[in-house]
Length: 107
Image 1 (spheres, rainbow, N blue to C red):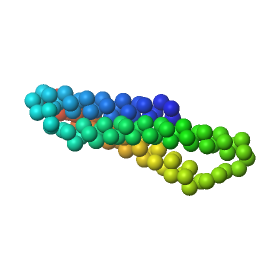
Image 2: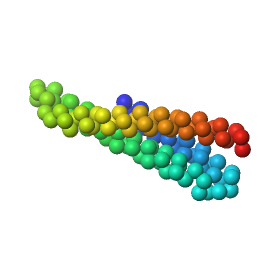
Image 3: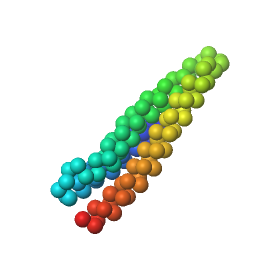
Image 4: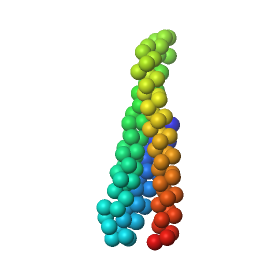
C-alpha cells in the first residue's frame, strides 16, 4: 500500500495538469477551476491516507506485540477513511483524466 497512495496522488495531479493546459489553450485561466481544485483536494487526501496507513501498521504491530487489541473504533475509522480517500481519488482522478484527454484531442 505504500506505493498506492503516491500513485493516486500523481494520477490526480496529472489530470489537474491536463485541465490547466486546456484552460491556457482556451485563453481562460479560470476555466475548469472547480475540477482543478477538486483534483488538488483529492490528491492531498492521499497524504492523509498514507499517514492513516502508517498509523494502522504501527497500531497493528503494537497489538501483536501486546497480544491483545485496543480501541477498535478509532482503528476502523482510520481504515475506512483510508479506503474512502483512495477509492474516490482513484475513480474521480481516472474519470477526469479521460475527460481531459478527450477534450484535449478536440482542441
